[in-house]
Figure 1: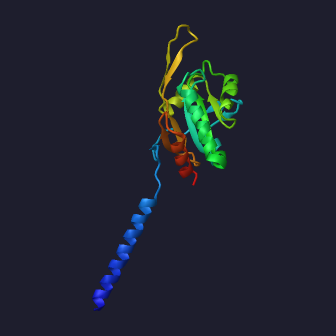
Figure 2: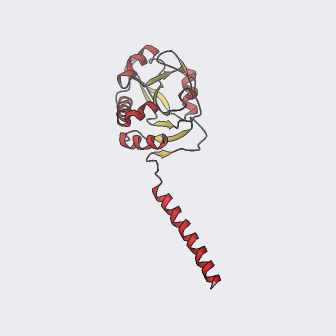
Figure 3: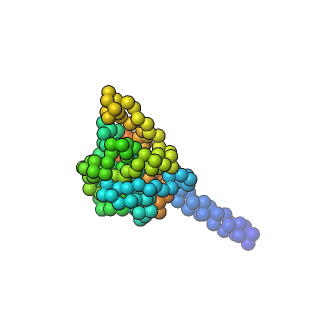
Length: 198
């Protein structure tokens, strides 16, 4: 009788633990966007912001960081992405203060500090535009696995830039966490940022 009671008690404990574990798994929220947690690249950069201040990833510790690579004369992808990021910030409400959006130019030949300073705040005053010379741009693009190249126009100055049309998200500790495909709805980005900011 005692052996039966002991077995019953042990089975009850095991069953209860299993139910508890299943419950935790079901309630655990997951990222909607591509999870890059643990990947060993996109660790840092050395660029200058639109205000002339040298910047690196560690400057934004304590905030979730969204990095997008583009250029100011882009006709569609870049402005569309920046408008969507502005919507994300609006939907986040007070939590937006814990998010930093960075626009990294892949066209340093034309995107001067003055041009970035005039362009970036149109989307959100908190956004920062980052630039470097040709060598610094190539270095950060390699570190972040970003493709870019010139596509000739009708004149030497009217070229366009083919480039990766996605964004990276870093957590408040500066670790790469998410890859945002172009065209993601703001709601999906807001969902993932809220998870990172918990």
